[in-house]
Length: 236
Image 1: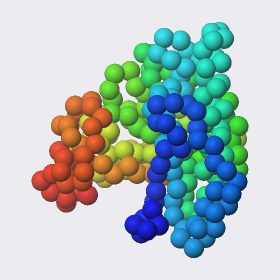
Image 2: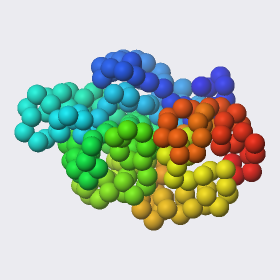
Image 3: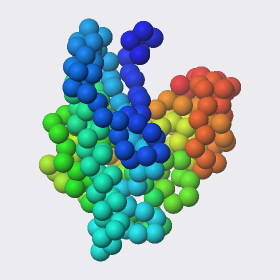
Image 4: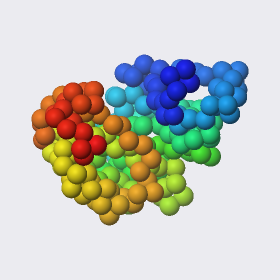
């Protein structure tokens, strides 16, 4: 990232399809912090795609299923470790991006996501970033209203440790904001401020889309080569 002159960097701290996180040595962490004193940047990680803060589609966490609760608790311990590592990068913004999860009942699912977040033991400067989905299947947090609902259920003592990552491909594919239009970009920011608050806008995943507006498909494309900005960069 330094050699490429990057100001923001995101990586996976292990297999994106396994909860087991790569253990970071004290020596590597010290060396990284020393390097960042010379080259400050924003450092983010992305938690595994298989994460579901609801537990699972078939069994809700914290609802009497002890087997599911053990699985969800294991996921949270790994998430806490990753948050503790990333919280060391205080020379810019930092955080752990997560796909909040899926569940058939939207209201119950959003409440459970908040309940799970309330069980996280955050370290100082630890920041969890909820990413909007493309509206596919039973995934939750497809729009700012749903994310705002989650924030309503988060304990006041933990709200400073939670923010939002907005993915442009996802929000276009969900059919919510047609980002080809400057007016729609403006409307997106107005709605974000209304339902969540701009102080929670911590990260932007700036992606074009391989699929059309409202496709409900999470398929990223390079900027200028997809259906959002393939014909014009004016709204970008």
